Amino acid sequence: MHQPVTAKSDAYGASLLGRLDELAVFSEVEGQLTRRYLSPAHLAANRQVAAWMQAAGLRVWTDPLFSVFGRYEGRRPNAPAIMLGSHLDTVLDAGRYDGALGVLAAIAVVAELSRRGERLEHAVEVAAFGEEEGSRFPTHILTSSALIGAVGRDLLEGRDRDGITVSAALAAAGGNAEAHLDCGRRPGEIAAYLELHIEQGPVLEARGLAMAAVTGINGSQRLAVTVSGTAGHAGTVPMVQRRDALTAASEMVLALERLAHSEATLVATVGQIAALPGAQNVIPGKVAFTIDMRSPCDDVLARAAKALALELEQIAARRGVHLEAATYQTNAATPLSPVVITAVLEAIAACGHTPLSLPSGAGHDAGIMARHCPAGMIFLRCKDGISHNPAEAITAEDADAGVRALLEATRRLDGRLAGNQTP
Ligand SMILES: [Zn+2]
Image (cartoon, rainbow, N blue to C red):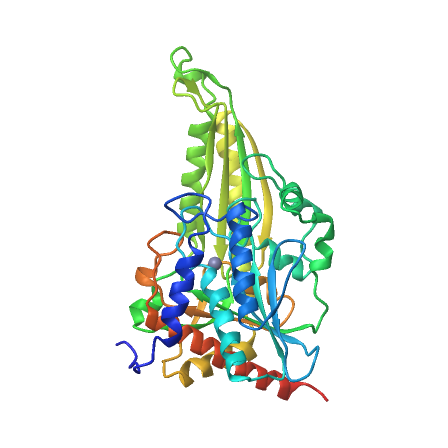
């Protein structure tokens, strides 16, 4: 069921995959890809990407939160920009396509425009964001949020596992958290945002299709939960007298799983848990864990959050432990822009592929940008739907199709937005 391909079908794809391999070398951990926000590996990846942007004919700069931007002017100077981009930070032990694909494909698109001497009505900006994943600090989609002025003091004081705040990490890297408002863009400055990203799910592969237009981004809610009981001797405290924080937390984790099963569109995950003091012969006195809930429907999320709070309190009361549950981030479900979706669907068809529309179960920078300008995404098929895993893979053929569709969608978007502009 694969699309027919021409002899030159991997012309962009092979070089794109080569660059993705080169970028994957920038890692904090040898032998795997871990590139957390503001780590030396992330800053080095930023410099490499800036160099590639420059070579593609872009004017390059870095903003106070270390997003890297490159600008390719349109026919008129200072025209509003169509922004193409994604993120360069990764999860721990990541694949090499999540995020980086969208940034490097965007550079390939501008390199092609530049090679042809083709100027659009709009400028084209390439964005390489950071801390989209939230794998270092308790805040995801951080640096794109700064573009729309949605970064507050509290987010910048979030701490990583070593107790380092975002502000301190920025200062250590030579940046300045105080200047986060300077990252903000004026209304109209960005005419539209478009992001190519691997699907991170199995739908495209199952349908035998290379690409889809994304219709919207699921809402999400993240909580930090701390359960406090009493630490004690693993040999001397009778079972009935224990206030074991870990067994209480375990019951809470399973309650969350049951809750997620009770709603058709809800998914929920405890991805991080720490038991203290963390000794083999000590009853855990304190447990901290995270909760990540997502749904395309805000009502479902709100209902689940209410039910969850009640259930956690009941478990804590029954087990005699103290509970603190704080919601530290809520992102509403975000529909993407019809004008961008239409341009993407047309572009996919124009590239000889069957267009499909899909919602996104994962959060993306596009979900933030959609609050500022018409925004859209193209999903690209990935092997077995696997992501956040070193086994992430795409074919050169699909990578080529992705660049072509991104280029074509940018042109179509340029035409549609220019046509809609009042003189
Ligand atoms: Zn991503």
